[in-house]
Image (cartoon, rainbow, N blue to C red; front, top):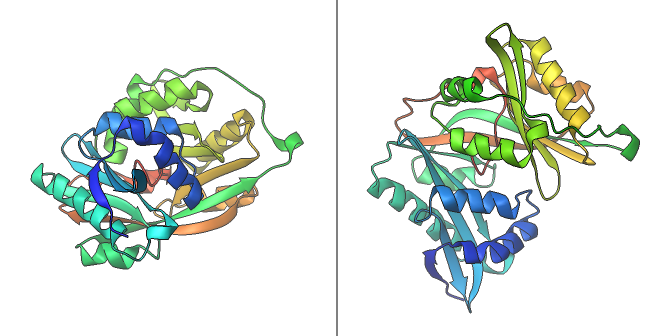
Length: 280
């Protein structure tokens, strides 16, 4: 069964959601829309018999580096080179744009493929999952934090400006945008999303363990979902111990990888948790 390749469009989002559901992932239609809005000619589809059977996406941050994500293939089309072809199209698009570095979060199964394309490991990430009873869930809140100074700091922590993305997250779930300040200084911040399966905490940044704990507790208090996901950076000294102590269970490992020059690595040791494999 041969597929043809083309740009992914907003009209494809329902079919992209079908693939996401087959994979058991947590993205929403709004997540797909964010990716397509950020990179309308940098997201790709594999199509067979007028049905989308595979996807890959890219998003470029300030021209400093780009993110490759959402490489999904319908199970019926796996093992036929469809995923590799979609991944190659993402790389070719970014190479033509002259993006100096590409990044992604790799599963253990995907890492050997990415290494063949010149990607190398940067640091390890672990996904942790919390399952709660109804009476353990938090109370709703719609309080929105002021984030202009947070966005400036996040540029240093992440390595590039992603204010459009973080502003969109705040607009969609203002109750999950949290900031801890000491006077005018930011000691920590967190954002979150309502995924299709679970609420997702990240990015989660703190310079001190007690601040990280405060942000985690407040996020859990505000979350209304039975399931909560968080992708912890193992470069951070306390993230995993904090989520484990709160009842989270290990879900899966990931490796943050890059290809090219990693001149804007940011400060991953300050990140308790990353935003997620689709965005970085």
